[in-house]
Image 1 (cartoon, one colour):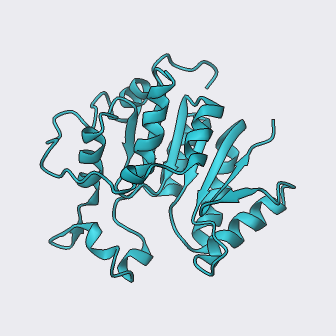
Image 2: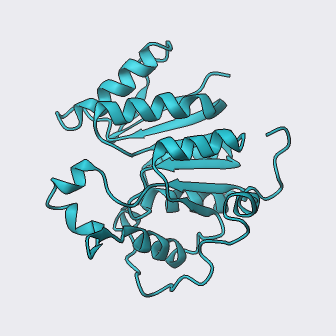
Length: 229
């Protein structure tokens, strides 16, 4: 965008949601389930990305119950980023691995065959008073990316935590890297060397090696890369 709106969240409500805030009138207590991750504290890469980039637009791909989005939104408020927005992108329908993991499957909160996880996310956002920063985009990564392109949006910080296989991660990197502004930050989740999620690590390594940005910093199951200026 040639000139950023003073309040990006409200601008996107007006343009994408036709003026209707998705949190307006949502029953705060009915689906409350504050994420356990909040009790343990967020990964420092997420908070440092907010501190360093001071984003107008922060994005998370793969949101689940909202712990990371909430942590980043809280940080945006703490450092006074008035008018910024944390865009939480997820279908809230789960991915293929949720159907095969007995620990994750119940979290989808099925109701007559339909996952209702988004209700929990919405309630958690309201319970943490971050609804003035967070805006959900209930789309898959590919369609959300097209919305961004058509809206001429650039991303200052993005947390990629969607699919856990090579194809999904590579697809997210290829789609979203061009929208990250120079100097912006990409934080990737589940970047581990313990044999779990080998496709995640392979995708990040290959993608950034081709761009001369390998090796990059990683630790605590996450990696981070700053886009060259």
